[in-house]
Amino acid sequence: MAGKRKPSAAFMKPVQPDAALAAVVGSKPAPRTEITKKLWAYIKKHKLQDPKARRNIIPDAALKAVLGKAKVDMFEMTKIVNKHLK
Image 1 (cartoon, rainbow, N blue to C red):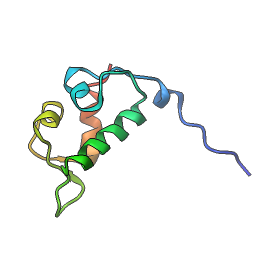
Image 2: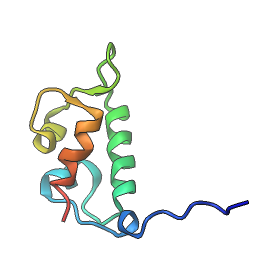
Image 3: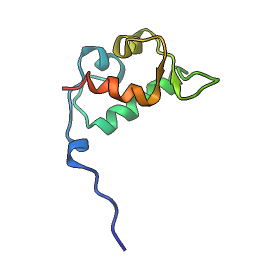
């Protein structure tokens, strides 16, 4: 029986969010997985998921500065957010 799967070192390496993303998830460097968790926590706290199609995110002003659109699919969101990480 195999042990617990080890996460990829690339995923666990802390990355620095840029100013727009830092306004949403904080300015401390964190692994991509943590940034994604914080982003989802923000989306849920501010009720930014489309109630009819929950895959879609309707960003508020702070999140729109990151995503740049009025409506974003959750899979597209991670691709856009990667551009805001150093």
